[in-house]
Length: 186
Image (cartoon, rainbow, N blue to C red; front, side, top):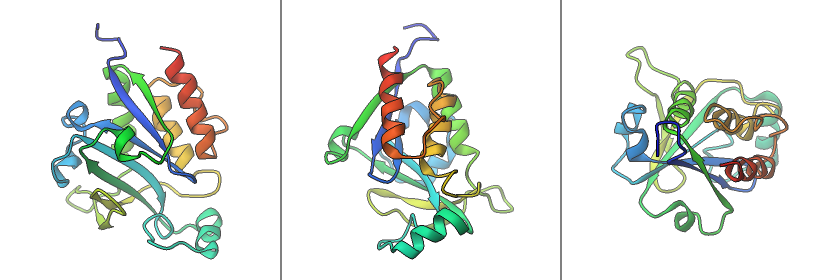
């Protein structure tokens, strides 16, 4: 495949309320140096969300309401794993979206730009991830009902070349439908 050919993959995982984005670590390691903070793994999933709701092992309706309307901060969950995305997330709908190297680099740039950084420019760990091998990190951006994990993922997919995914992407199902359309265009 040529330099513009879609020879890389981004997997979109539907977790119910939100989606996660998965890439091969080997495809992004040079462009995403923060991954050096994780244990070795073949794949990496990332998601963005409210700083209280997303990392909580048990969520309440009050937490969900605060996240939607009065969020104080946001986080990234970055998780490494070795099974294929379809196997690791066997209970979840998964869509594989082919992208070219430039699109994958653009997606990673969006993700990297989301990390909050300490005075030495390092990502700020918050707490261990909910599953897999990884961490929650402090993130930038104001979480709300209209700027949520799904709209964040859609913006990253837009950067990768999936035009028009951020329009109407408030729900996980809408992002997955748009990822299916993008995957069907290649």
